[in-house]
Image: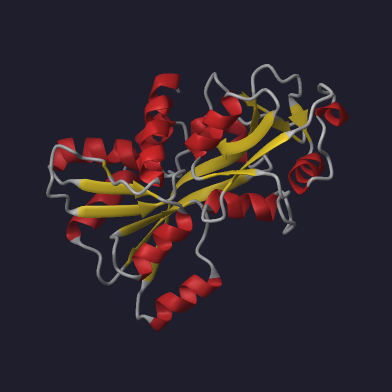
Length: 277
C-alpha cells in the first residue's frame, strides 16, 4: 500500500482521537449511517463508505475511537454499526441482553497483528516467547535479540483498543505490559512513532504496513497474505462489525451487505487486509 494513503489515514485517525468526527462521505452532510469503533477497521470502512456513497448516495459517518468505545456506542444506541478488532466480551453480551439488544456479529475481514521496527533495526525475527519478554519487560535491550546495545523502546496500543486486548491474550498471555511502554490511540499513531525511532518496537494491523516500517517475522513465519489465510502467522484474528439486529436501519444493512459483497471484499483486499469471502 502506498505510503501516502497511510499518511492521510494517520492524520484522520489523529484528529478522531482528540474528539473529531471524520465523515466517510463528506459530500453529504445528512449522513444516514453511523459507524464507530476500531481504528483497525477504519480504513476498510472509509474506502467502502466512499464507494457506497457514489453508488447509492447514502452518507456514512465514521469515527475511530477503539473497539471498546464502538461497542459501548452500540449498547447505548448512539451508533448503527460498531467496528471491532476483537470479539465482544461476555460482560458486553450480558449487558446487551439486559438492555434487550439482539446483537449480531459479522466478520468482515481477516487480519494479522504484525510486530514492527524501524527499517534501520537489524533485528528481523523474534519468537513468540521473545515478544512476550519484550512487552513484559524481561528483555529490555536489543543486544539480547542480536541487535545493537540499546534500550528497547516499547510502543503499545492503549487499553480501549481491541488490538491491545488481542495482543494481551495472544502474546502477553495475560501478563501486564511494561510500565514504561508508550501507549498510542491508533494503529496509525503506532506506525508513526516506530517509523521515527530506530530503538522502538510496536505492533500494527497488516493493512498499516508500508515502507516506513520493517515487519518482523514471528516464529520464523513472515506476515504475508498467504500465511495469514492459512493461519501460519501466529498472531491472526478476525475483524468485526456488530449491529442491533432488531433496530438496524435499511441503509445500515445495505452498507454491510455492500461490504460483504464481492465488490466490498475487493475493497478489503485493496486496502491491505484479507477478505473473508
